[in-house]
Image 1 (cartoon, rainbow, N blue to C red):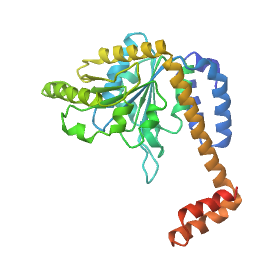
Image 2 (spheres, rainbow, N blue to C red; image 1 turned 90 degrees about the horizontal axis):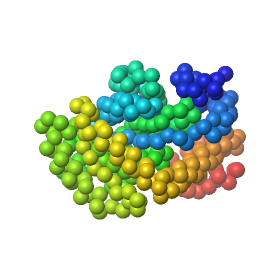
Image 3 (cartoon, one colour; image 1 turned 180 degrees about the horizontal axis):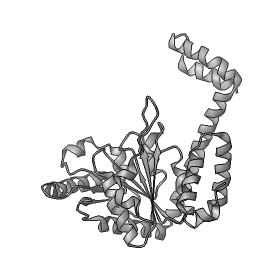
Image 4 (cartoon, rainbow, N blue to C red; image 1 turned 135 degrees about the horizontal axis):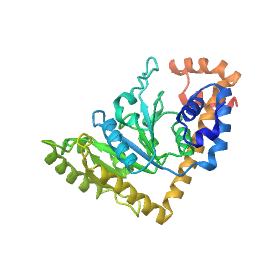
Length: 317
């Protein structure tokens, strides 16, 4: 049994056990996990949730460690939910984020939890939302969600955090060509990392390019996305990033946008869970199990259109 009082007091072992239960695929464990989440729901919602994404090699782990250590120096409790990509062949993950955030992992007020993405879209794990609620109940002030990397479905991250930060490299011009417009529309801020040494001047040029690009896009009325530079390795510009996020939070609270955004995110989550549960029910249906391979064979042989085959499956319900 998981001691909820211990979890609420910030006991890391109790929190880790609760997350393991939430991530379990066993039906019995899922029922227990939902009971725990229901009991803890009144104790959630008091953190700021920050999504951190960026291309591989941009220095996400280095940035998060420097950022997390700075927040702890301010008296904050920081939870890091680091998502590792799962192998599409074997399904395994290395889950080595604690080794990449060695200093942060030693801090009493830090909790680092690596989770496998298990093929989930958007660079986040299947149970990231539930895990965030558990961390909030355990009294963590800031929750950082480190994602797999910039991909087609990065909106998944933006749909579960209060502030979405994208880390970029100081490659003026070239990178602007490659960045997806969708990411630019979702990002609340772009932070150009590795702005040190010979790259410092290049980072400033890149900052100008992105600021001009943002002017062409429409964003929420109370916030214009910022572009700033930092060097996580040299620990420079980290304080400015937090000041920017705090400014965003204050403006969002003032406009009532903070609560409405979270309510909207819960509604999106609710709709997504309905789709997932319907798909599961479909796969468990005896008639569907019998007909599915036959219809799949017909689709492969071009004997039936995919639409009509899908409609036959749905009609079985």
